[in-house]
Structures are given as C-alpha cells and as structure tokens.
Image (cartoon, rainbow, N blue to C red; front, side, top):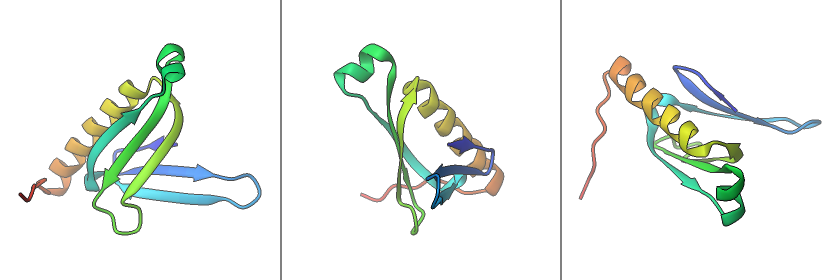
Length: 92
C-alpha cells in the first residue's frame, strides 16, 4: 500500500501483479474492521469507500495500527479535495 498526496495505491501479487489506484480527492469514507485478535494484536482491515467508478471499495488487509492509517487517509482526502476544489456532498 502507498499513500501519496494525490493517490492511494494498492499493489498485490508476485508473479501476476494487480495495481489499483484511487484519486485521493475521491475518497468519501474510511472504516476499520477489526476482529478480536486484531484488536489485541493491533491490526485490522482499512476499508476505503470512494466515488471512483472503477474502484468504489478498496480494502487494505491486515494493516498495523489501522486507526492511525484511517486518520492519515481521511486527512489526505480532505487536503486533496481542498487542492482540487472539490466539495463533498451528501444526498438524503
């Protein structure tokens, strides 16, 4: 996993590699899923929900300190929206 000021990049695979990217300003929400063992040992999955048609949901598996990573992604998303001039809106 790699977080830049413009993108969140997921690379996986040794022989056949898959790369997924989300423009950071498109991140809508970030959640953490932690089983009991994850809470005890300090790891969990960080789930990124985005308004990206190709990758609307990206799961970062078995991340150490997932709450800290979640906050890093949220902060980067707020900054990215400010730079791009994009406002987050909700529809009821």
